[in-house]
Length: 249
Image (cartoon, rainbow, N blue to C red; front, side, top):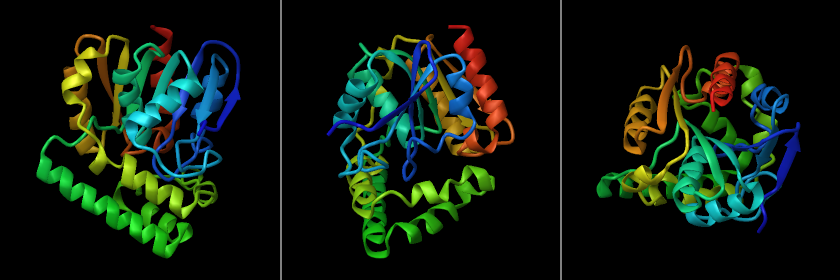
């Protein structure tokens, strides 16, 4: 199952990995800004967008991303950030540098992970029963997305996804089914930028711990005035942060 990709710009490649329920077209102003300097490769994750089909677990997704993106800088948001971290530890041969936003290397506590797995399965059932439009309304009403401006919600694009694609993505690649990668982070030997929105307290703490576990190659940054979707809530600030970091590579 090859991953659908869309490419813009010219220059060294950067591969963008979207969040759950989105598609590769949900990056807002970031993608065209990057395309002025680089070849931007926007992938649709398994079960999403024009890749379609069913979701895949994180190790299989990492293999698919390596085949689709090749050697490049990888930038992942939320689910895409978890996929990017998996790629960095499984396929370091293709990761030239790494940027993750609002992502976790996994839940270490087995009881907490089991509870999250049950919640993911319940949400998958809700998606199958209620359909994608109802899920999109439910998802975007969550407090973590309260800061999204109208142009950053991408409701029509999200509704292109299929119920089975989203449900199986949750069941196979959700945080509850993710093998924790904390003990493998120190193997990441490329420049890494770990980002969170300043108002996203949970993921800001995870970002600091993630960078510390990776070691001297990693730095952290918080985006002022942003929650979980910092690239869409504060696109100018996030884009400037990424462009400045890339320029220093």
